[in-house]
Image (cartoon, rainbow, N blue to C red; front, side, top):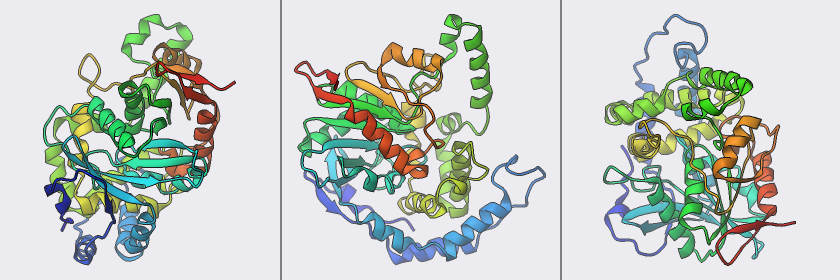
Length: 394
């Protein structure tokens, strides 16, 4: 069923051009499996209170099988120059879309979970007037080889990304990401401070933890209580995939309807201001991401951040992105005065806007606004100094 990624087996020391070409047999198999889905009964409960509603998912799955045109979206993805290179023993897939402006700033974008480089499909065109855009696929996602051992660290990904930018000939560049990418972007700055001019993330700097509670005033404690209610809702995918990712990978790899239900559930939770995820994200874009996960069989391999990367807190549980002060930082989502105060402990915050639109995956929901905010941040960031730190343009 899944495409054989035979390039993993050979040594790739240079950048090999890559083009997506899913075998027709895999498309036929996907449609056949969707047509033969054994659907469950709808459980009692209103709306999404028991999970993805049966009618909603059946309609989405039917569109995937009969209305969605993978070849058209495959062709669109292939408009982006793509390559494979071996870094640190792993085959890494990446997009490299140079700007027509030769002196444009290189920008390294890292996607989130449960996403892929598809996340930036609409954003890239908004950025290339001002940036040379580089989009690597995180190991274990899409066409990038998965880690072969446990203990794969954030720092290792960051060093791989810094090496990729070196191979592309970029001596100075910005880093950006959301969700999982919000962890990677500052890690690259920690790994290569002399080469990163600034770090922009969608959100994550300054979220409080239990350790911050003793230093809060009454108003901040009330805000913390509200945050706890919000964070306790939904399916804890960190805990689920930390505990038994192999168990769930069987169904997600064998049943496209099962995979679609899981991805749709998480996109619904991440689109917290919308009733359904396709109200804010084009459903064909969601299905392109789901198709990439299906054809590459990466529902299991992509779980490694949950058991290796995101268990960074002292108690072994979930931790928010770790900051750095080597270069300036900013984020699209801003946040409260409490979050700004906590963010500034470990970051040099120079960009903290209020009122930007969008939910969690803003690159998919609001590509124009997202690109504008990225431009605003990096337009204020100056050249790296001799000691590797960055200054701000006056």
